Amino acid sequence: MSRADVEIAGSGLAELTCAWLLAARGHRVRLRSRPDEGRRTLLLGASTQALLRSLWGIAEPAELDLGTHALTHRRARWGATTAAPRRVQPAVVVDGARLAARLRDRLAAHHPDTVAEEPGGGRPPRWTVTAASHPDDHWTAGRRRLLAGEAALAPGQDDTTARLDCTDLAWLHLTPLGDGNALLQAMIPGPAAHPENLLGRLLAASDLAPRLLCAPTAAVSLSAAPRLHRVPATAPTADTPGRLLVGAGAIRYDPLSGTGTAQALRTAVLATAVIHAEATGTSPQALCAHYAARLRTAFRAHLDTCARLYPQAFPSPAWHHEIDACR
Image (cartoon, rainbow, N blue to C red; front, side):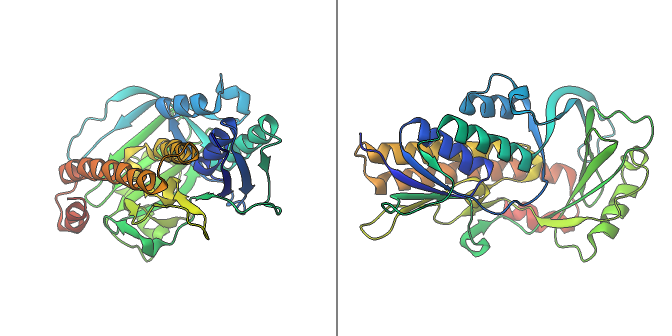
């Protein structure tokens, strides 16, 4: 087997995991980081944690020293149902930027000879792996937005239970952060001119309002509709390296699924398999076609799930476009 020269253009979880897996297989990896995007809250369920530890050879989460906050239960009220049973659902809240930094340190410690922090001369890469892509290059299933802001929990509130609630217009999710605050998120069927005002109104109309001292005073509005890159893989030529998109640059799930991080890690596994197989003599064109087909299959299955779930909660005309976009 020949060794592939691979440039990893980015330092998100998917890119770093691909770098780790490739380096472990003896490929030459060059890591080109993106600027730190600052704190980003991730909620990792038990299965995602297990996948992350398996891929990175981590016996216990404490090895990464992330200062995580553990959640033990979840209450969910979906649609017109009045019951919100408390179910055992272990998860941890982590700072995604801090997690990425710890994984990068682990990568450098275990593979100092195969990972360079910046490309510095030598032969051009055979492949480039990145999560960076242009929004216009995606198929996007809808136009919904995720509003997000932090606020203080009311005194005496349980900070080990995540909560999902619905109003006529949106679903809301409350995630305790372990420091007396909580992250409040709300999915709406389209753009919002004043995210913090709308988030406050949605909170007031939900059963989550008594859980917080007040509504978030600041909020962001993020594009959150599922999306798939039109060409997530291109084979190398004599003049240009092949390109493999991973993470949200390749495929993005609706946040309701709770499996976005796990799917990002799976794209890293697939990208690693493509590069490793090409180094053993398999056709890069066939491998890229297989990579794209696997992502299309996953995307279609995810949209089918969204098309089943959203009509149960939102019969209002405001959601018709979003539901139709998933069919």
